[in-house]
Length: 185
Image (cartoon, rainbow, N blue to C red):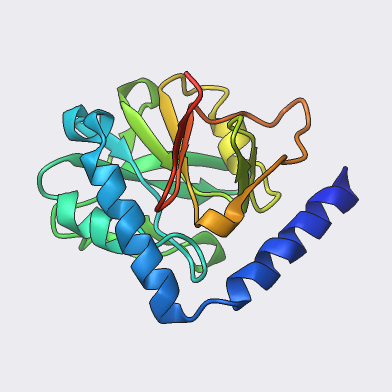
């Protein structure tokens, strides 16, 4: 299983290298527009997003756009665990945390049952909702406490026929790319 995941991560990395930063930014913008158009996003008052790393579907503009009008929460990594904390309306409480990812500092922790919608990153997804992350298991551990709507977002090339999943891997309710929306509810 580890070798299959390693090979898939390398494949996705190779696919990503075929696109320029401008192309990835354009694909990200189209994907974020599709998120904004979702009824679940429009209706949700508390949305868990992520602050994207280079090469991930970019979420920065979405976080900034809605921080003042919705209760936007981002992940905070503390050792082996992750929780979500509130982003200030002007995003002024964000600073570099674990793995160089921007995290809310001094933001109120948000209980899992208050999050209505979670937008989830991943290295690869499949059409059945399978998700493969970076291998640390932070989201899978968090999903033990979270029962709300989980939508994985990725570039089209990250949507594969089958993601190698283990018993502890938690599937998505839906997967969204710039071109597809696959609902598994």
